[in-house]
Each structure stands twice: as C-alpha cells, then as structure tokens.
Image (cartoon, rainbow, N blue to C red; front, side):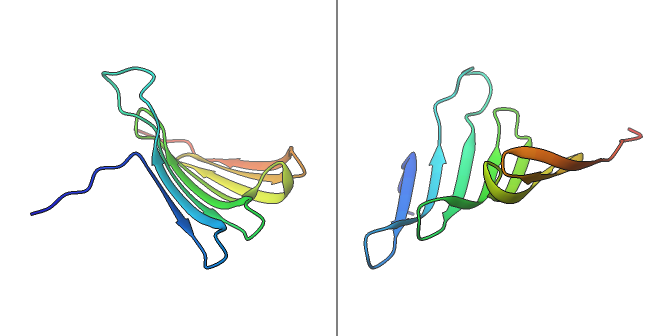
Amino acid sequence: MSELRIRRLVVEDDQGRPRAVIECGPSPDPPRGAPVHLRLLAVSGDPMIELRLDEDGEPLLSVGHPDRGAAVIVLRTEVQVWEGGNEVASFNAKSSA
C-alpha cells in the first residue's frame, strides 16, 4: 500500500485561488500531538469554515470569520456567537462526569 505524507495541502480553484487548506503544524510540546487544521476558504481567501484539533485533541469548529462579520464557534462544551470581533453570546454545557 502506498502512502503520501505531507504537512500542508492547499486545494485551488481553476483560477488558482486557494479554497481549502489542510495542515498539521509543528508540535509545540513533542510528547503531545501537533495541532491540525482544516480550512474552507471563500473566493476572497477568508476562512469561512475551520475545523481544528489542538495539541490535546480538543476540537473547535468555526463557521464564519469572528473578526469580520458574524461567526459561530463550537467548542466541546461551549458555543459562542461573534459579530465584528466581539463575542455577543455564549452557551455553556456543564459535564456531570
């Protein structure tokens, strides 16, 4: 079985504009994992959907760009709503475990 190993993959449209990026960054703490990102980009190049796992494997999903207009950020135990760089609402879930 063949295997291809890369740290960053950029998918471009037929105009040469980046539209998706998958990357695994350098590990800031080698015993832990490296952060992983999947970004889907608007034609302008702004990230519109981002899925991220940090060094500990904690997920973050972002829809929209929190610094430019409306965005929703979903963490494992929290949902945040942003508008123009400001958090305008958040909802928390408390775990009983």
